[in-house]
Length: 331
Image (spheres, rainbow, N blue to C red):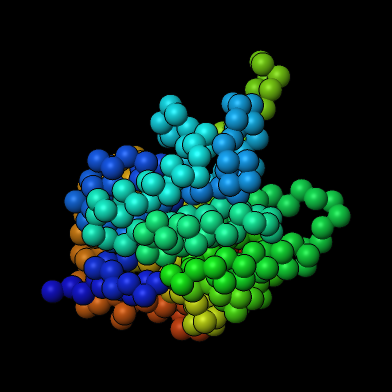
């Protein structure tokens, strides 16, 4: 029998497919459906720094400002927007989700500035979260802040959050840091037990009829996985922290690719929103069939076999691949 078990954040998971941060945990029926569908762990939607510092986000106009910091599928939220709710409601929902399922529940804290809001990490832990995911989602718009200063600020935030909790800490980042491998190494040293690669930037659009800025959201697709595969392949086996793919995982073959690049687990959201919880079984079935065909008996045999240290052609991950691709194009 195929062994799909994996370890993540100290948990023995039955397989590597985790529900990423999304609106789904706001509905306990959907939470139970996720567990019934076979999900290995559930990540809560985020508690935002802005919610904590202001307690309640006010007007709809203010919510519109969140397209630069809102890292989940906002258009799939219920009519009463999660951002309008108080911190106590979030903590209460963590308790309810934890009581509703037996799989690990991972809290999610989203912030980009140093401040007292990081103290709420311990409240999420006290509410019952088995682990915490810190989402460092932001756009660097400050003209006077250098890349080094920005990274230093992120490191201090990770250190501050890690100092306030006893449960494992995952850190979700973007791919747009100047020297990503070096920054990833610093995050691991600062207390990150796992790096989640990557959060997605939701781009606003311009409404040419209304002459206004419109927050836009597109769900992920499998092509987005390529960026994650490349960076996981570079990081796998080279830094002392676990690695998770988030974004672009839609089927069992996507899961296999992520594991081969070095992932300890994968997060799915768009695939769940499109196909429902039954998608988990479909992905696992496809993964098992592929593993059996290729002669793999366990996830451990598969993990990292195509990372930078072990793949047959490491140059394919580097600049040489750029030249090969351009030269291979024919009109």
